[in-house]
Amino acid sequence: MRMVPSARFSGVARIRDRALLDVLESLERSPYTGAVWRSVGEGHDPLTCWRSGGCWDDGTFDVLYTSETREAAITN
Image (tube, rainbow, N blue to C red; front, side):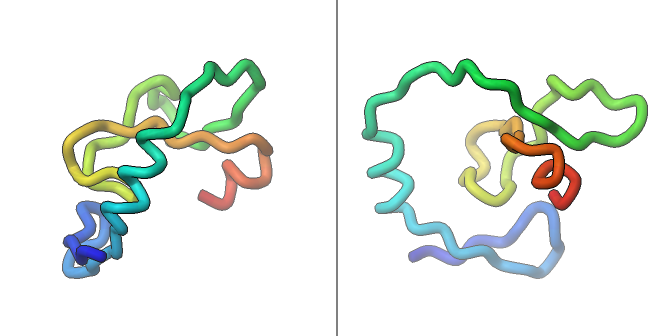
């Protein structure tokens, strides 16, 4: 595993298992057709991605974090 600084929390490193991410990326993908929830600040466009460097990306792409339940979206 590789430790990388978190863009969100200065000085905090996150563990990213590059091998795990490679396996996930190699899986067959299919469209998701269900509804999702997203928590954003007032006045922000819910379709705007977060800056790169978050929980699951290595800084090379932006992320649109969503949840399948309202409760999960609120806790993020």
